[in-house]
Amino acid sequence: MLGMAVALSLLPGMAQAQSNVVIFAAASLKNALDEIATSWSKDTGKPAPKISYAASSALAKQMEQGAPADMFISADLDWMDYVQGKNLIKNDTRFNLLGNKIVIIAPKDSKIANLALKGDDLAKALAGGKLSMANVDAVPAGKYGKAALEKLGAWSPVKGSIAQAENVRAALLLVARGEAPLGIVYSTDAAAEPNVKIVATFPEDSHPPIIYPAALTKDSNNADAKAFLDLLRSGKARTAFEKQGFTVLVKSNSST
Image 1 (tube, one colour):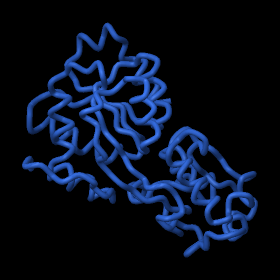
Image 2: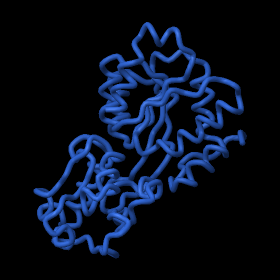
Image 3: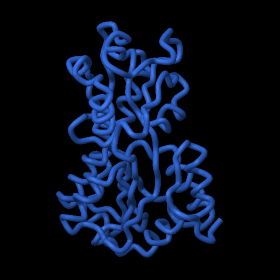
């Protein structure tokens, strides 16, 4: 697991020796955040942040176990609430950064198009295949997807056909490779993968609002971490996020 591997490599003793900002971020942020981090490093001459991408649930648990990080960006409020409840973040630095949508995807060459979502429509479209989703009990994308399916009366017909992945990008990959005929991911993930297409978008009122909060960790003492967190509110970051399809929830600061 990429996130775990990165986190476990950053042992406390090593964390003291390195000057990079260490960020734990939801897997769905990879394209946008990599672009922002590369640009920041080029503009400032500072080392690029070390970013560990994984499910928000896995990252929160790693933080609880003592994995060092300067910043946490979750794909839902629940896991940020969790680490805040464990006194692992600086509460006054927390803010809601982004919004997103969840969609159903199929392989690019699939004959499925304009899929109906209510009742057993989805189960019929699967035709005995698997529905690829992030873990429905812990990972935000999976939790949002399950909630939406339940609201639309489509969960019971498909719950025995779920292929659960460790994070949303892993769920995306199963569909991109043709190993699952359909999957539930964020619209931003679908936009980042040329081998899939969107065949349905969930109504926004079918699941809790998709919100990505960000915060500095309680033990971070890296001055560059605060600067990078501020950058996420900038117009330059807004452009990168919006290019990937995110909705930016914060007003841009004066940075460009």
